Image (cartoon, rainbow, N blue to C red):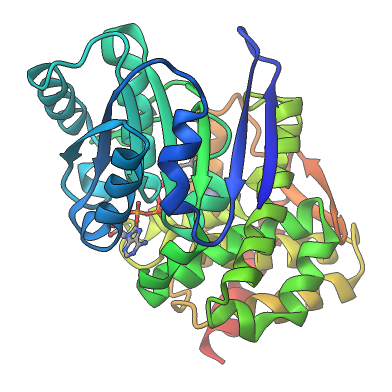
Length: 368
Ligand SMILES: NC(=O)c1ccc[n+]([C@@H]2O[C@H](COP(=O)([O-])OP(=O)(O)OC[C@H]3O[C@@H](n4cnc5c(N)ncnc54)[C@H](O)[C@@H]3O)[C@@H](O)[C@H]2O)c1
Ligand SMILES: [Zn+2]
């Protein structure tokens, strides 16, 4: 089993483990019981598709460890990541006798994790939470780092807190039932960890592409653990968005703009980030901040994990969006640009022309 300690210097400081292993779902109860939280009831927040595949296995494991699970379903999907879901879940917790000693267990993807995390941080001013992520994105990214949140009509993740879980239990076997597109999309956040900090991840993804795409449990275990280690190092050094944590936004500046420009309908998050990483690499090489060879490598690796939706947006509109972002963000848009494999730099402003050129190139690459 891979066990990664996440140490956060925040106020108050905290520490917890992320456990990553094939088949671990069956031991979730035992691992939670070992936390010695001195309580029996646990409230399992999940959504119907996840419950269908993995609910029983988790419940059996919790019951076997003498924990008394209560299942609370929320409707599936990003559009239910809102305050209504929080208040509905909280109301049902009260009805089922939850008190300050309640434990919330999140079983699902990033949506369930973010909602359950926020629920735990608000319920009676804060109760404990355990994350049991079941998507690639949630296992290697969303369940680590303590960010919780919901969307408002006015924008994504506008309400949220920092509330770290007591434990993360990631079982790569649960990824077997993920829809293909969701599965591939999440892998790009792993690739991101390779480019920003750990070249070994990048090489592993080059060398083990078939095994990874076939969802080989051991290959996924390695990839997820290595990516979690990167995220743990970064958030450990910097819980909030200030300095080092910014590097996690590699590929996200243009990625977010692509998502927003297409009304969140064309790209899954990881897919937009994939194109964003290609764009950032092209920009870096165009500005002579890195070798063209690096851009070439990132592009071919991204395309090796394709298919990706076509980039069918006007480059000018993406540039304009970044300009608009700039006004709302104290006059700077930070770009994270690769310097060499495993190292990036934060560049406060990139000329509009470079952005336009890079997006044009994405359009071209995605038609090929
Ligand atoms: N807190 C953070 O730091 C952080 C970081 C990145 C993303 N996020 C958030 O994560 C969310 C996206 O998460 P996501 O990509 O996991 O999407 P998701 O939670 O919507 O899951 C995608 C789909 O897969 C289904 N699913 C999940 N696990 C499954 C399984 N094992 N088998 C079959 N189906 C399964 C879900 O029901 C859903 O329909 C966004 O809201 C984003 O803002 C949060
Ligand atoms: Zn992301």
